[in-house]
Length: 136
Image (cartoon, rainbow, N blue to C red; front, side, top):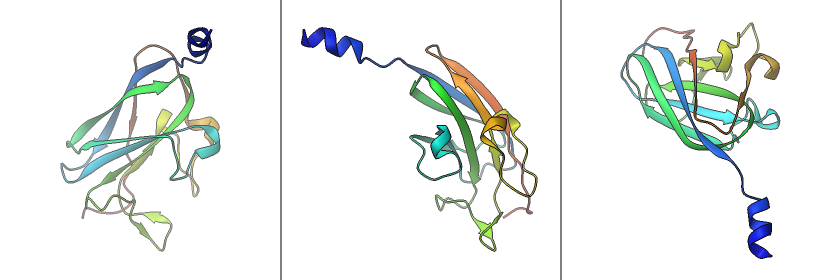
């Protein structure tokens, strides 16, 4: 009986590879967070991963993501301080991007512009970074 209950609560997971393009240098790391709707644009997303920056394209892999709807948010931590540096507390000094290449127009993108569905099979998504400021 216990095994039957455990089987019912088994959660399907699958790997997700995020290809982040437009990385302007090999300095630092590229961070990616996968967020459900209620955590989007926060620092409390349930999945976070990073990889050493590679100029051009950097691949960030999540080995086991529960199937569901997510938005990815990313930044290029060129100075390796593990946070998005900003001017006046708002304007990003480092490259940033969102799944589905959701546009930023004087405000962060809407959930509906960045959401994608991750199913029970391995998946890859792609989006690019934008830099609003010059190099570090």
